[in-house]
Image (cartoon, rainbow, N blue to C red):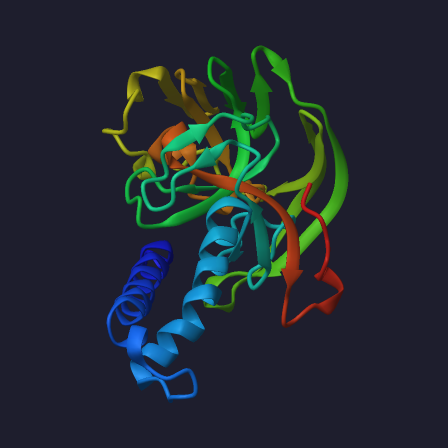
Length: 268
């Protein structure tokens, strides 16, 4: 569902109804006369819809985390806020950048439109910037020839789909200015070969083997991976995220019905 489009349609409809009434019957209607129901509702809701539309389009947008691909950083059921202006001001609906403010940084947690179906929003961590060479060898990240430093952080357990209890090995990882916790499972391969799409743009920039993969990020694109490395459908399988698909940077958990202690937590 394209909620931005729905908001825009509601904004136009209520605004047009209010304007038509103001230019026609509203000119001669007594000040104390009761407004027609449709006009009354439109006049009441238009300012509210306009405010929500502007806030959601240019400042912050709420999202709900639907899967465990970003565990332990983000849990299923987290409601997060996404900064819409850090990466530039974009036209609502069209998502076309009109003012360039900044670019994604390595390690940012970013919401973007899934390249294979732009009607879906995904959230992953920025691992590779334009021009980077990203390697994932025996479950260790190597960027531009330098292995990303990690420190053990114990085990992390969670309940996956089908009520399967999963225990993984967690570690502290530093990407750019971000220090976060990621995890893997010992028995899982670094890449599941049959899940790798063979037709994504710039597919020739990537090579795969039993130890992992190596990809060179093309200009204007980003390489994304989930923190739950062995349970994430990410760039290693469907390719790079173009700049025009960017929605914004996730920065805070504003609600979680199951864990109130997570409310107000900032995302690193």
